[in-house]
Length: 387
Image 1 (cartoon, rainbow, N blue to C red):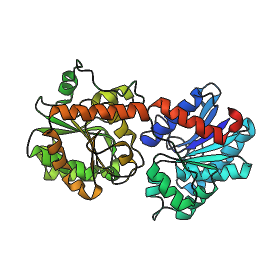
Image 2 (cartoon, rainbow, N blue to C red; image 1 turned 135 degrees about the vertical axis):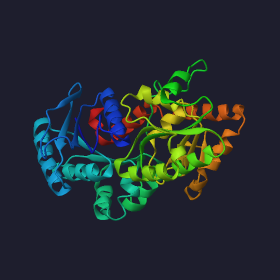
Image 3 (tube, rainbow, N blue to C red; image 1 turned 60 degrees about the vertical axis):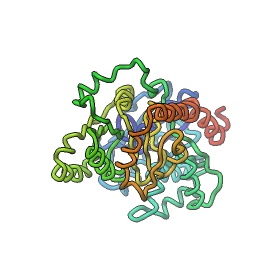
Image 4 (cartoon, helix red, strand yellow; image 1 turned 60 degrees about the horizontal axis):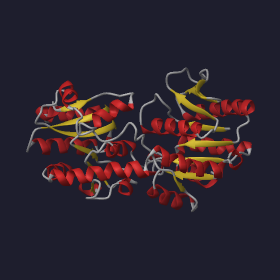
C-alpha cells in the first residue's frame, strides 16, 4: 500500500492538483492501493477531514493548514504516524519537492520505508533560489530512494543538484479521449457567439492560471500587436491569479479598447469544457519564463491547436520548431505578437500539417497509456513485491 503526499489535489486549482489526481487514478487502475494526504485552507488549522473514498481501499485525507509550515509539518507528521500505524504502508510518494517531497523523504526515513519524490517545475527552478531553502531541497534529492522528473531538462538539473544519475523521466499525460482535434464538421459558432467573439476575430488562447511565470505581460503585449493589424481577442481559459490582477488593471487603463477583448472564462471544472474552449483557439500561446512540462500546452496540442511557446524547461522536448508547433526563445518573447502575425499568414495547408503533427505527438507519446507504462516501471522499482 502506498502513501502519497501532495500539496494540492482535486478539486484544488492548478496543474499540481491535476497531475496528482491523474497520477493517483492511474495508480489505482494498476491495482495499487493509495492513501493521499493533502492540505487545505478550508479546514481549521490541524483539523483532519473524514476520509474521502478515491477507489477501492484508497482514501483521501485533508489537513487544515496552520499559518506557517513550522506548525503544519510537525502536525502532519503526527497524522502520518497515525495513518501508518493503521494501514502499515509499504512506500511513500512525495508529489512536488517541497513541502511534499521533503516530508515524504523524512517520514519514510524515520519509518524505514522506501520513498520516491516527483519533481514538477517550480520546485527546482524557484526553490533553489532565495527565499527557497536550497539545503532542504538538496537533502531531499540526495536521500529519496527514487526520483522522477517531468522532463529530461529537469532531470539534468536534479543530477547537478543531487549528484545522482538515476532520475527517471515520468512525462505528463493527456486524456486523448477528451482532448482531440475538432472534427471537420464540428460547429464552433455557437460557443464563439456565447463568448461574444466576432466572426472575423482571431482567437489567441491561453489555458491555466495566468501569472508572471506564465508570461502574462507578453500575452498582453501580443494582443496589442496583433490587434494593430487585425481583429483579435485573448481567450484566457481559466483565471488570473489574484496577486497579478494589478497588471491586468494597468493594461485596462493604458489599452482600454484592447482590454475589452480579453475574455476570462474563470475556472472550468470539466475537462471536456476545457477542450471545447481550446478548439476555439486559432493560435495557442505559452510564453512561460520557466516550466517543467505544462499540461495545458500538451492538451492544446492534443486538440490540434497551432502552438507558439517559449523554450522554457521541457517545452522543446515536445515542440519541434516548424514541425508540430513553434518555439520562441525566452530572450525574444517581446516579439510574440510578431510571431503570431507571421503564423497567421502561413498557408492553411501548412498549418493543418503542423497541427496534425502536434496531436499525433501527444497521442503516441503523452497519452494515459504511455503514463501507465512509465508508472509500472516506477512502482516496480519502488515496491517490487507489489507486482
